[in-house]
Length: 245
Image (cartoon, rainbow, N blue to C red; front, top):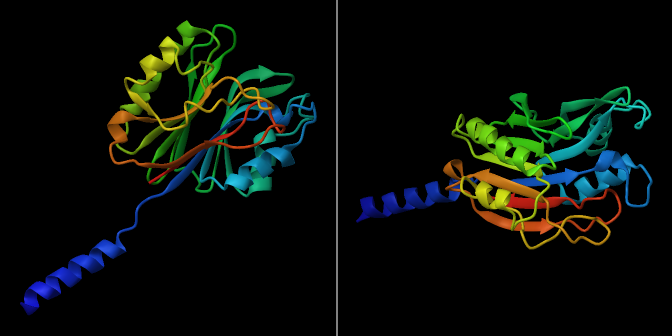
């Protein structure tokens, strides 16, 4: 009897010591920091991020030392204001500098790689950042449906190469009822709120920003919260947030 009690006590102790990984993921198209009022403010972008306190942010529409940004590296500016690590992936040469996407993270990535994606109207890219317990991919997909579908095949190949939870986030430039998003859901589960529009920020009507997970690595994930952050001015998109365990 004493032995049984001791075993039960040990099991209870072990159960109480189990720590579940918890992550808060954000995706935010920042339009280079230019708000709905035409004002460029990196502080407003940083404040929108700080209010949510995410572990990691997939960021789209970033200028790097362009004329439009007055020679500033925009992701670095926001990283300094939020106290996060910055990882940038240029998609095109623009206005004397670069223009692309990036990731802000509390934890410094163990590895980060950028891969070109199809883009008929503009070159596109996907940024893959590997962290200790998960992988986050940031992208800004083409305006062309054929390009988006071709991109999906390449993204699935990247996802197959990891056993860690594999997240894909960004501006997908398509609505939830579209053929592309329906095809996407064959291999990826959408974690963000499909019923909450994200664009335009002042009075959202369209859902085109998403946070997803590759199904084969998402079996043990549980969404505890999903929302569109209430930021109607800082950019032309509202940031989206998902909390997971």
